Image 1 (cartoon, one colour):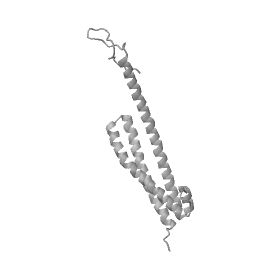
Image 2 (image 1 turned 180 degrees about the horizontal axis):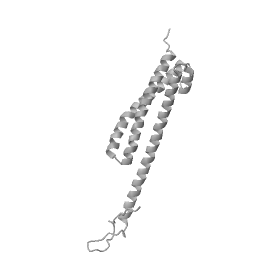
Image 3 (image 1 turned 60 degrees about the vertical axis):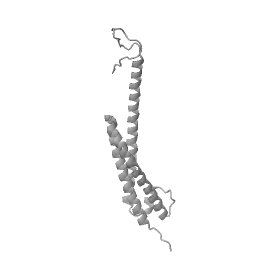
Image 4 (image 1 turned 45 degrees about the vertical axis):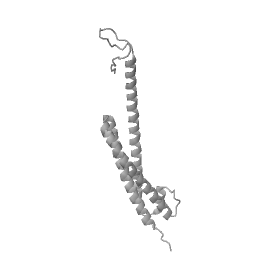
Length: 170
């Protein structure tokens, strides 16, 4: 006689992996919110430290996600469902811990959406910052290469060539 896993055990493992994955995603959300603040403050030292924190935290979140997917497949198999059955369908079919698992599924979805939303906001802010830098670099390049830029030589005459003063305009 072979050992056959019980649905309650498989669903309990699924619950534990969901809790772990949600916890990891909340950690990533906190990091992305800090990243947004540091980008707005242009705090390169803090952004660099945050990058290292992200490099540690991201594999942990990926590991939690992989363990949850494995537990999800196991629960589907124990419930005699196809391995790629959705979490929602597993919860509906499982019958045990339905309300708790449904609550965790909703928390998981909210965490995933919040992380995606914050990443999108950070991406927009990063693109905006890069556009500003490109504009400022171009203004500097044009100002320096403009022969009529308003610089003077040692005798007080207009200097020829580069070396213009860039004036900030509103």
